[in-house]
Length: 56
Image (cartoon, rainbow, N blue to C red; front, top):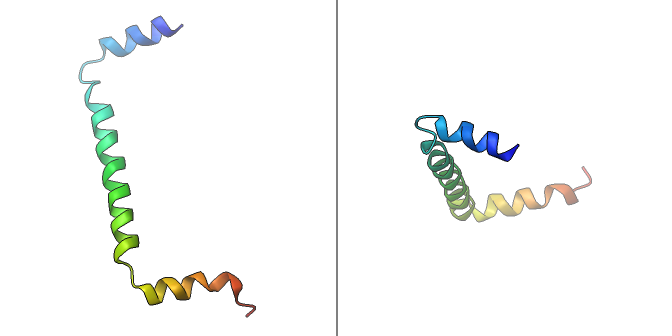
């Protein structure tokens, strides 16, 4: 079964760009998320971390 899938993937033209594109998308997303978390205001982060503990 794996041979059939491998053969199909080898015959598709331009298939080698999909893994590179996916890697760039995920890398960009996680770097952006890391920057957002690093640059977020500490006061707002402390306020949001206390929300689950409030009884209101």
